[in-house]
Image (cartoon, rainbow over all chains, first blue to last red; front, top):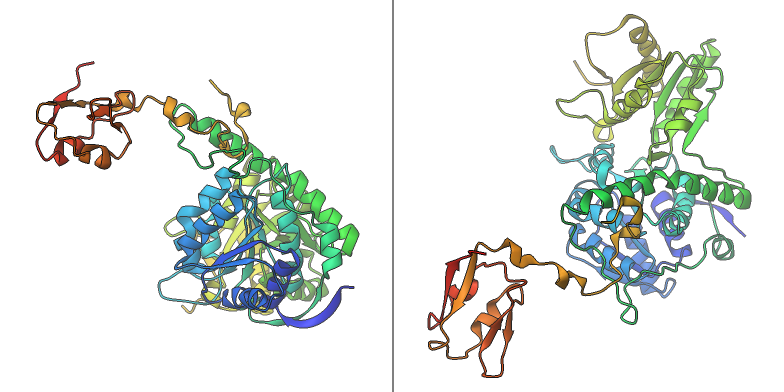
Length: 391
Length: 92
């Protein structure tokens, strides 16, 4: 039986990976991700997990080893953060194109410089267009459950894409939360063994990751893009299946008191829980505000988001990343694009805050919403506001 | 020609070794020319060829040239001890 325990979220992540009975882990330690792979190496050393743990010399090698491993049909896991994800970047596009169902937890960390080990979403945005499915966790339970669903989604014959589960560095990785840990019997019932017809096999040879000259490259890219968009139904079906089995339902877009809201705050990740306090406080003051949180960043949940905010006149979007010299933050930029062609679209206001591990208090979220409403009505001379920065 | 709908998952190639059908010799602007009178059959050209476009060895013990795949890089001519290979402009 599943049991509720107080555990560090990183350990709950490692436990989920152990329960999924992975075959290969290739990872390089980097703050704030280290506790996950440390715990996994302990499991392997102690015989609690029958897997190959490959100690690599860098994240570039980690992802390269993962590609080879996954191509042989082995269930493969890695984890990284921040600069580690940047070093991995060159290889990230390859499992997406070759359709290798690697699962990776990314412990979101601000990119240097200045050097920071603390959390924001700049690393996640940097790898946005590498072709992975990207899920964003709000809390420890999310992390534990999403990892289990991620393997099932990644390896489903109608998906076959690598999956990243984003968890905020420190705000999730290093906190202790009450988490219901799944047990082995339950996970075995939910997650079938990985089998793949086109794996590397000497008895039935195939070539993976070949050359794509101009006469075929665009066809391969269109096939990849259409396939990624088409994963949405399977993702939703598998999350529903998980909910039916374990009572915890996950959706591409999650809502909080947003049904009749005139102004909706849009967030991703762990700060969403703090933001709900601001929504509660404003509701008590009689304001019709709500929260919508994206759990799925890629593929982008266009229809689900439009449906979730249909009551709203205003949307206030929080980004924890800057697009230097560009428009609003990356999340807001996407949301504006998603709504641009709609008639009667809501006003969409952009905030950038919570960079490099800086907290956002409930009071600041309140200010973001109320000032956002003002900007929606009266406009602003700035493309976006940076909240919580000393002037 | 394949359409995007015909692409196998992950663009995986299920006919191994099919890259040999691709005529990389079309890329060549120079071709190696052998003077077998100078060749001492050392095999360095065969070892250095980055594209496995020099074979080792024919019935008389000399290297042989794979015109279909050779890209004309000239490494064989550069490395040949006895200058038995030189590059000439491709005229085809």
